[in-house]
Amino acid sequence: MHDRSSQVAPHRPSLITSVLGLGVFLIPFDVTAVVVALPGIAGDLGFAAAGAAWVIDAYSLALTGALLASGALADRFGRRCAMLAGNIVFLLGSIACGAATSGPLLLAARALQGIGAAFLITGAIALVAGAFPHQSQRARVFGTIGVISGVAMALGPTLGGLLAAWCGWRWIFLANIPFCLTLALAVPRLITETNEPGGRPLDPVGIVLLTLALGLAIDALLRHDASPIMRATGLIAGVATAFGFVRQQWRCLNPVLNPRVFATAPMIGVGASLTALQFGYWATLVYLPLFLSTGLHVSMEVAGVALLAATLPMLLGGRFVTRWGWRRFFMAALGVVASGDALLVVAALSADATMRSIATSAGMLTIGIGAALANPQLGNVALALAPPAQAGMASAMTMIVRQAGFAVSIAALGAMLKTTDMASAFAAPFILAAVGAIAGVVGAATLFPAAQTEMSESRAEQR
Image (tube, rainbow, N blue to C red; front, side, top):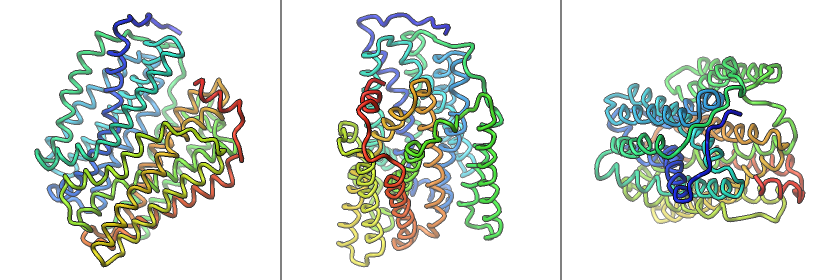
């Protein structure tokens, strides 16, 4: 490996951690902050329910596709270069989002943001290893960055709601400008470049196949104005392309995602649980502001504060270390998420305003607790199960599964939402969210071992 990094000067570790953490902060913030503004965006730009979902999915789909290429390109051309390039693209996308005057322009700008976000987060995470050569240092920095990411997810709805209410939804995007400029100035001055010219090569066929599969499926699910035959054709094409991607990856000498890493039952369980969590929690979070606006008639400020019930528990989840064994733990955690989704169904169908408010609050808090338990532990389990030589691939695949599952689950719930004018219309997507979480419970019961081994536990902790 060609690595020009040097030891971190004693007075700079905290500053370097802050800079890299800022880069990571922007990525989840631009998801959770935007969800609160969806009703305002839909009203201003004339989006239907499906169009509002595309505001999130355009970002997530582009992020997923670009993540497939960003690692190899960062290795080849430099991790700092990747972070800076991603930061510039993210900045341009943010400015374009703030200036968008139509739905298509906003979606194109969101896709540009997603591409920039992929290189920004890939570069930031990869630079930690070069900036902090000792394992103990890296562990502390990754822990700090994890907390920063959690804060972005937890406070994003509140800050986004306040920005949208006080300044307009465009300022959620324009607020990125000073942070991106800070990164552009600080990263070259504080962080040394590292690269690996002989690293893994690109797999352009795999990148195109997976991105196309996701795009076809999402478009079919969200195309409410198309005939059932057209939508079914799109879904079939998406599934067929996904099968083609898996087959190509098995045969490829240098796959972008090595399917052998997920070829065991427990690793399949990780993928199933990650996907279930996207349905039961993350996609539900996208539609909650629309439901709060329609069902409880609250403003964007109030919606942002109300969503803290679902997001604040995420700050505590990383501190929880299970001793139950993976099977029982993930069955319980996803069961809690399913229970919260069921409460949201009750809220959507309730004709009594007081009952609707109570069920909504209880449902948001419950899905937040369940997600806080499961979300950080799934990443740890993936690392514990993977052989040491494949730890990096396992981590990358976990990130891809999260993003792909998020994009598809948003579209699936959006396909169930026919109108945003009635609170009862949200019962169908909330039911699907509960079904997704229950499927995760079944997957955990059948795919995870009853108890993890001490070796797996210690291996995950070391990494």
